[in-house]
Image (cartoon, rainbow, N blue to C red; front, side):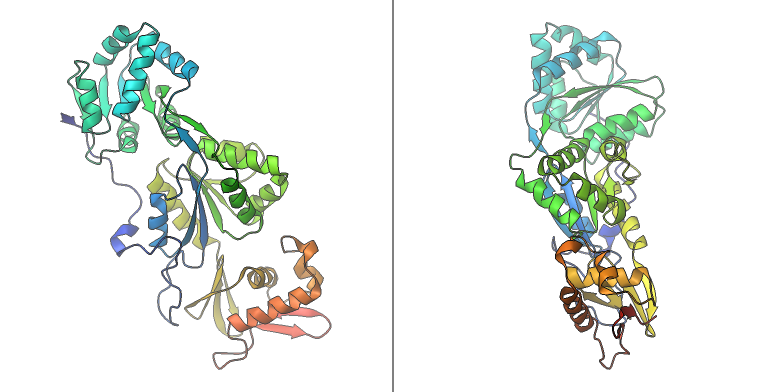
Length: 405
């Protein structure tokens, strides 16, 4: 086997710091004052991908984040007959320079489709003239059974690295045929096009909505209630399914409002972002359409959204679901946290209960007593009136509340 240059290195380096925290936990809960707080501690991230337990969860947890995984795509391991037949015809229409094969199973489905079209021999002849890139040894063996011998791979044995290997080379005028079986691979095909290649996608799998709508319905509910601080969208079908479910449930406008103001959508690539961008929603994109780059973008994006203040002589940093006070991470419940964000929007200014409600999701269900109770719980969480410092949240009689800035 001829081995291509290993292109596994990426922008993510957090794995060198030690063992990842458990999925869904925060590595910094209970840190003492003066200790270092991890960059994502206090933030909750929703991961919407093709599986509930994605590897990104461990990477982000290692940086202190709490993650919630959602399977937002159902992958069916069989091709759409019309789509794969069209891909076979397009494959043999012109000479091919590069071929990416993601799996031996997908290769068999591809060959079966070519046989049904009466184009198997023509397709294999065309493949023999191309550079063949196979994900792993089993996939390479499937190509050898066709009489093909010059097969390339990468040391990491991932389809993503095969794409990255090509993207790193001059691709203008090159014709690439890629067998894909993961929704996210469509973004890698798009990256090749942006690099100047002509790409034929051979979809050996289908990507549809989850079997149970409750999965995405719960994700949308967390977004519109601002119970997550970012949503990571791991493929084009993911975005489509999230938006389609929001439309079906009649909450599309509420979800979009949350994505505009409070919950950034961090997208794998331009195809994933397209559905939101078409609705005027600002999106954040990974530098490369691969999971490590997507996780790295979360690591750079969320800490920038923290708000640092000097409140009552104490250093306060307001994060998504927690507050760092003088170097100590303090988890805060959703209601009190929403009140704190409202007060921090106008530090030092007195806000009435009505003004605070205007900043809260579902403000119509919140009355003055609820605001008063939220302030009380907030004070309790932040050590109001104890020996650590003066009051952080001040009450101005008959007027409202303010931060002691």
